Length: 211
Image (cartoon, rainbow, N blue to C red; front, top):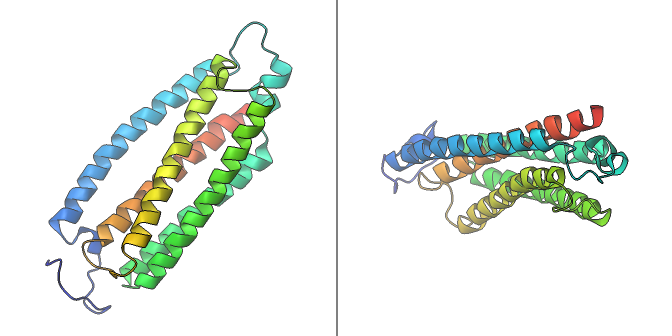
């Protein structure tokens, strides 16, 4: 299908994200990228579980253990923000299928705002831990925690920059077969980092507090 075709809601393809060869190639590249990301996070999770509550003999476990440190209400609020942002990106893709560019931009913008909210809470959490002495170099356990959760936070930042760039760059272009795959892949990426966070919430925070 020609990239320069003028579309209307009546002739817009049902799967515009894969209507061109470029769009199909983006999907293949994205799945290869995701496979690498899964290996990366699996390694970080395994390292965290191996080093959980580990450190020097002088480490005060009554103050710096997972059970003593983590605050479930904060982690739950972060989870709700991220899961809601995943839902808003689904709304954006729903509007893309209906050739509603304004709807795509609006819901992607809301996704970015929710992602920023998540990031602010994560920065507060890190600041709080460092403030009470649980910094990156405090113990093997703290290094594993900050590396795992921080790597996820870095992915959130990348996703926010990615989606924001799409919003501003295509503000005057409208929806076409060139940018439709870009929005769709960005949405899939956002779902991926949401899924990773659900694992972090369960393995790190929930299992950490429950013991």
